[in-house]
Each structure stands twice: as C-alpha cells, then as structure tokens.
Amino acid sequence: MNEQRRQILQMLSEGKVTADEAERLLDALDRQQPEPPPTPAAYPKARPKYLRVVVHSEEGGSDGPTRINVRVPIQLLRAGVKLASLVPPQALLKVNAELGKSGVPIDLTQLKPEQLEELIDQLDEVTIDVDDPGAKIQVFAE
Image (cartoon, rainbow, N blue to C red):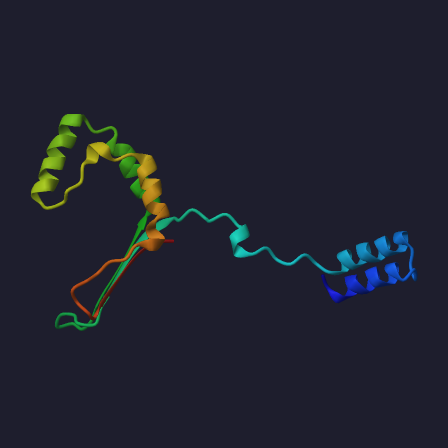
C-alpha cells in the first residue's frame, strides 16, 4: 500500500473525512496512478519461428576462426513432419535402414507432429558438449 492511500485511510479512521469522501479520494488516486506494466511472466510465451544453430570456433582452418550460423524456419520442420506421414511405410523402412547405416538412429515411422512441438518447447535447455575447448555451439528457438 502506498503512502497516499495510507493517509486517506488514516483520515477516515480519525473522522476527518466520511467514507464517501474517502472512496472518492481513493478513486481519484487510482485514476491518477497508472497500473504497473505486467511482468514478462504475465505474457504467454511467443511461439518460436526459427530453429537456430550457431557454431563459433577460435581454431579454424587457414582462413581463421570458423563461424557457422544456421537459421531454419520451424514451419519447415512442421511441414516435414506432416509430409513424413504421407510417405508409404515401405519407403520409411528403407529410409530408416539407410539412416541407420549412416549412423543416424532415427525411426521416422515414430515421428509425430506433437512430438515436434514438445521438442521445440524444450530447446531452451539444450546443451552440447564439444571436444574442442575453443568451440562454442548454441541450439535454440527464436
């Protein structure tokens, strides 16, 4: 409670103003003081539009430090998941087998749109460890 409100209530308790007068004073005080801006937590979290991968390494090739900045629209990821549901199951099995041979253990038959949304929601907590102490990798949604 601020000091002006306290003074109005004190005047009311001492009988210096009536209850109606105190109410009018408090209303006038409310109109005079704007509402505080809402905290960031009051706003719903905006849906991210991009998946971003940033790699920065001090030790680069002969051209100096390496810097990679990839920004993929999340709508492209969502569309890819939807398109995967249109691929015939036999083709998905073949793709899974080839991905497995390449060292990418992903089962495309299990990929669902709601799982992609869960993944996007968790991107703020992604941490990547790299063997190169001079390299920094960030993966986040923006």
